[in-house]
Image (cartoon, rainbow, N blue to C red; front, side, top):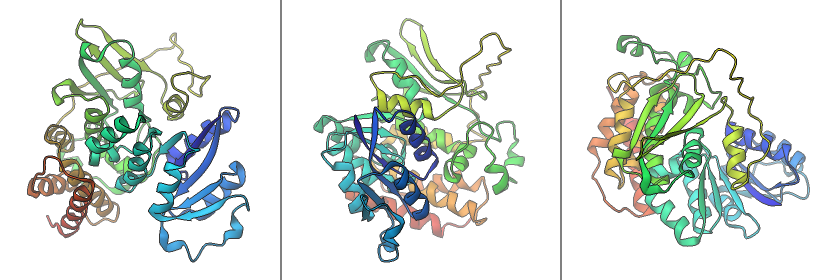
Length: 382
């Protein structure tokens, strides 16, 4: 029985993880659930799964919570201290890191230092502090298994050979809702249009990131750290059907791909069950139906965010913390109609260019860069 701490239980990845646990109670048990401030939803989950701990990440709610909402066997914890406590508890074997944004870093960091298996959905942890997190996992005997569909696909394809036999790693991208839009049309994108993703149902922040292709930029950086890859080994291919989730090309010319209909429960289940495979959720492929699979090169002129991802993956240091923080604030401003769609990558690029590069920053230095970039982006005017 694997004991799981689920950080971010009320988000889209969290809900999909609950589906996986619900389907296999003989294999998985929820030791802890954590959410930001959706108290009613968290309480409802606790009544179904009866975890030992429930964590409300927003500490300002500590004095306002009606504890009778929660079952008596569930102990309430608050803030970063609560997140770190459940992420490092000796009874926990797997930590699902699904808190959105840089806020998820502390839980990922704590779990990696404690030798846990980290089922990583929070790509920002590696974007911000890739060297620190991966080194911590190696030192503690922990492991980081990706939950992103693309990185899960790469992880699976890499099992077919030795790392030195890999020539290139190809991350696929749907291209988002504006794949065919002109630059002039992109300048006029509304919030409602950007939130309408053609393939995946996700939270608002990651949906906007997919529309700007900043999500793929962050995934390039994540892949650099997850797979110890050089930038020259990484490539992005636009594949609108999202059936091939990524590909690995070997030195002999062989290319291995992982295919399935889009369903986030599949990579989640794989990360929880690895090295085993279990009967899954994915709709089975019907190879006798008419299938179209298209592939296109990305357009860096229309989607400049993607170029920033490759630049940051090459630069390392504190640049990932700056890009991620600037993007989080820029997306928030866009969602509040305070920034135009195409200004998101522009402000990110300008804040990135303005920061002082540090080669091997500490966690405290990365958090300081994060705070600086957020303030710069809040004050930025076109």
